[in-house]
Image (cartoon, rainbow, N blue to C red; front, side):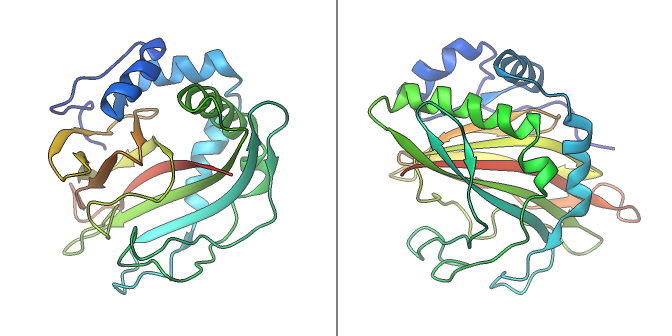
Length: 250
């Protein structure tokens, strides 16, 4: 059981061709799942989506949480993405953020289990990366290559214990562009995304509720955060699954 359809104070922009000027103007966008799926499908195949989504059932516990929490599971992969030409997965490596961007978990190299080869090299992941390259490349036309990280996140909640999608609070990631793609929600309430300007003024909020619902954030210009999630039925498993893709100039 999941939440009702995506809602929020920021309207859904359902025409993918509008995303480039919208992001240039506002710094963020929310795209409803049906429109996001259509946009991705126009960019490449999504043939392995069932296996892609099911791979969230095989994530490892994030043991690098400075708050001691064990409510987050994840896998991680890094890609070299040129402006044109083949996208190449890189050797497995740690994820690192400075404490300026992540005061809770930053300042250390964090090693996570790698994204499974079949998932990381499969058609859905490649389509997502190619679609992002086209969009973010149009926003930064002088950029020749990108350092790209992909994160599979599962946030779990249970009776008396909320799950925190962004335990560091309202934050930036220290990159240039961010995609958050909803994979699925099971028995989860809340999880509202909020966007704030650099001077911390609220710009909008929305809830990623359905598969393919997406948030796009210009990280240089906006802070973002997600409210904690809790189970609707505390006797049943509850989790929120998303793919986060970050693009940083190489």
